[in-house]
Image 1 (cartoon, rainbow, N blue to C red):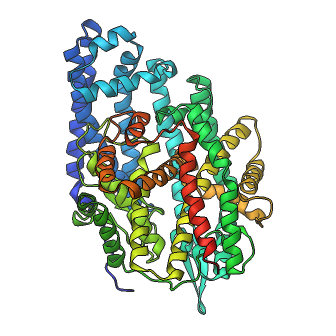
Image 2 (spheres, rainbow, N blue to C red; image 1 turned 90 degrees about the vertical axis):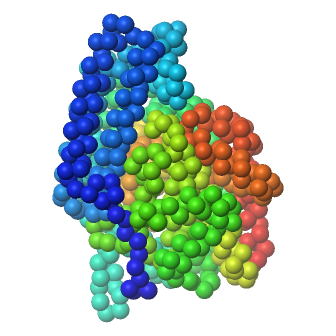
Length: 586
């Protein structure tokens, strides 16, 4: 196990050397100038054909710059301490900002057209026409061309720099851990598995180390967050006139504020379900009803997975559902685009990224050999499968919006759970697996929904001029509502929000996880009832990518997101799992 060969990706498939990247860079510079030259033609005599030609040029530029940006991001992810990778990211950020400012005129011109003229100028390419119509929904939030250019420059040297500072700082943290008589220093990714340890002392110690470290750095991390929130509020609420900060994300997700508010309210109504589950679990384990033990595993034979064992398990689960799913998921490893090796300096977490539509995706994760890692692999390969199924679309429409972006990934986890239960019929294993599913449901639904609710509170508090300690207090209140009045919650847990990269990098992103997980629970129920008929419909659903509005796609597959009962069906699935596990006893 110690000498196991774990996959590392080969980024030379994108660029073998700096000269290749330089060629693309120079090519995009020429394309940008060509794009700029279209401006006079548009002002003189805009035609449907001219708009179509501009969109074709725009697509080619977008594909090339996305490839360049992905390469840079992957270089940084594989070693966040690599100075050359940091420098490349900085250079590309500046280049893309300059390029964006030069080509900005087209979006401003298009959004300012009256509706009748815009419809006459839509190109024959249906996907480009759809993308152009999508651009127009931002009309009332548009600023002048000069103002938009200033904001682009501001973001490149302000907001994005703050995000980079957060990533560099947190990826450098190490944590002392006793291993026998020796003290070793773990990265955050190496420490995190201990919060799921079978040993309660290890869980407590791991959490204390995390909270202490982020608490020690709460001043600078909190200051980064406060400044990012001020920047976000000033741009989007004050200047662009969005009604609330979360409205920005909702608009990008193609969902209205009322629908999202209703969804979060349903999550809030079901805190008791998770409280009951965690109370049952801690009672079964004979440990305190405490925040330290929310991810405590039930006693069962803890299996350590080699990477190959975990990978084959995921492939088998995908194949049982659909041979096409296995085929698409397996492309990643075959193409040497999977990096699962633990390394110092490597970015934490997991993600899936693609260089261009239709191309094989890259997957980044950190393999510790735990069952949790097998689930992470199933999750990220679900993203890759989704990317591959929708890869025939334009770069503007290939990716599903955030609310649907987690569908294939979380569905992949459920396929894996089913496979593991089939292979292990013992009561102890089934009970442990049900507990794992409920743990995951908490982490993906309730935890993410409450992160989002905290963001809403934090934005208001910062806008009102409240201090960083008051942000910690607000997070503690959030935890108290989430877990109920009886759970023991250490005051140090109030620093936990500083550990969540999404809160810093992508405001209000997290509710998409909860949205996707609850949606998948309902889709899973359909699959159990319909079998292969559902498989065909589901593949079609994923193949749309972002080429249709989310609500239309959901209605087509049989889900109404405006009906509270649709969401409650997902919670009903979880309630049934809880009843089943409670009947199994200790």
